[in-house]
Length: 125
Image 1 (cartoon, one colour):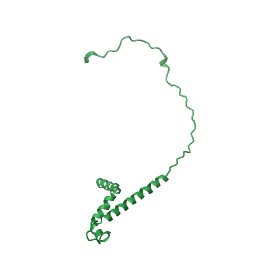
Image 2 (cartoon, rainbow, N blue to C red):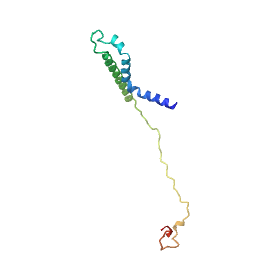
Image 3 (cartoon, helix red, strand yellow):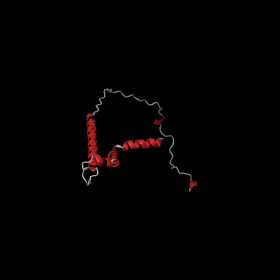
Image 4 (cartoon, rainbow, N blue to C red):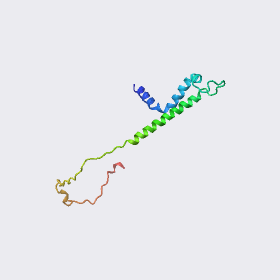
């Protein structure tokens, strides 16, 4: 089920970028009908257009629509401004004095002094 959902969402995301491909595919599917009815050169004996003039018109129309939609979106994004004002008033809190609770055993002098340095056991050598 997840695979189908992923494929569906991917197709939805990629659909706008494949718009001109859809226009071309729809043209190819209806090319014979377009040549017989819509084409400007349909009455000519040796018609070399084969409906490509209509394809060009459709692609230009699609591009103009895309450009118009992008311009509308750009205008909308330019009109959206977010103003965030903070109404918080901060006041200074005086720091709390910390008194040491430990006894003063660290004030005494050391009882003994060792003149030897520590040597690890030699059984690892």
